[in-house]
Image (cartoon, rainbow, N blue to C red; front, side, top):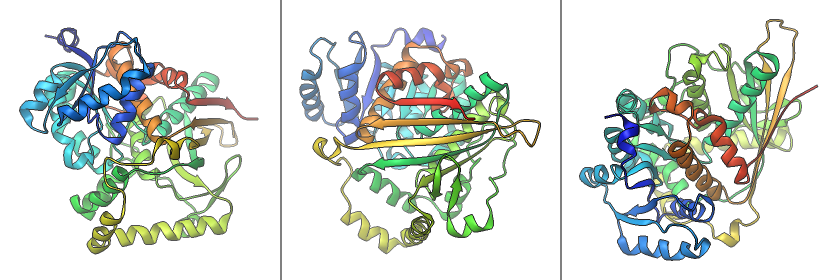
Length: 419
């Protein structure tokens, strides 16, 4: 029986697994407050009492909607298979994903259930592709990891710039330079825990292999990393017209492989262009500050390689499941900007496009929006992800229907050609 036919018989359209966690609560609040009131959905996790508490808390956000079901499930194969069979789309917020996420994905792949999460753990995503991409294609399961603050915004900015360039000039992009232009945000305990435990779970060789810019490619080719001048390699600093002085980005190592996977999935690289490259930075005040950030990040990375340092940090940081309060995050925001260079036949042709994306509010609220709107898009729309027939895909494969939902939810985006 086709996946679509099987899914039409399922009890729910969306289940949020890990609903009692920090990001899970934001996702449930978003679904309750803003998704269609006829949506059939459920919260899921290990504790029935905690799940019922979440349901009671969010009830006041929208009394007109269908109340969610409560599904108790442990991280056991039988529980997860049973849970996956009940829904069209499963949202997982149970992390760190490299410790707890694989059985959830495996259950979804086996049952042809669509899946989204908000991991930023590229080594884990690399392993998912190796193990489950082919099987997910066979069962029709759309599996989209890294669909939160990492890496949906960058993936969608790049897709939007390439689409605009194609529509306006009929060519692809040679290079996109993207930067976190401005941000005020506080990470949660889960984010800290994930970073620290990655180095406990993977060898350096695996981290290096999976962290290459094109490590997640779905096709062969385009393996070279963008060339950088010697001064930038030494200092981490680059100055780009219309973006300012830039330096190293914490998000770049997670975002670049996902965007490059989108390059490979969408028309075999032809849509973005055969010469496409992406560079990701953070804007800084000046070159000296940029150099300081570059040195600090390098030293920090080397320090985390030492097990005693990780042991100490794990006892100092906020624990998983907790994060900044609603009062603390009410004035948070993030803005990304990017410039795309046309891949024109004439080397003197310097046509460019500019994009600006902004979110006013908590980064975890944005992740909740990304997860819920992606799940609804998969459940009720037709996208390139559906045309591809399943597999380990990317946020950009949900295309315009997904981006339009995000914009209605408050994610601002402008894209235009530059003089």
